Image (cartoon, rainbow, N blue to C red; front, side, top):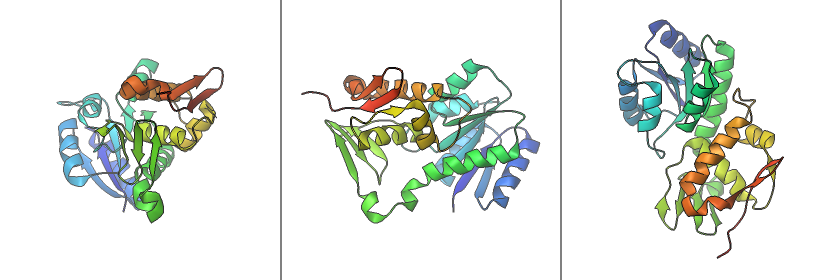
Length: 230
């Protein structure tokens, strides 16, 4: 069963979201603040976390900062703020999706479903896919463990960074428009628009270090992957 962690200091919102998710068949636990959320990530190991930004003790942004890439669930941020700077900050810290309060519960359920499909990927693939390993020069992606490494050194990637990189690595040289990447990686129209893709590419390039050139910009269209010359 897919596990969802709902984190919000407002009891009415927390209870309403949890109730709606349970009706959809998810296993749900709740946390009242960021510190409790961090603790429950370790014990509950959720596939998706619905995470409020403005909370006492440890904020939603702080939770994103403190979670490491390998243990991180897919994250849907909730906030009363509606400023593009706040959205970009959330994405840069590793959030996978973003909704502004007040929100439509049906939309939230749709977004959680899309994120859970990505987060639950390992449990659903066939054995031959589980053992799949992609290589592009010194870059290696192991599908079963959802890990990426450069010459054996693991990279700290979020679920969406992993999905985006693997998509590009599967077909080096193929050009993907931002719209296609948004559809394939996020599995739905995302409120952040194609700017979301650019932000994730920027973060990936930074984490790739000297191999940042593996992801190339195709001006006016989108991105592709390529093996760097030795």
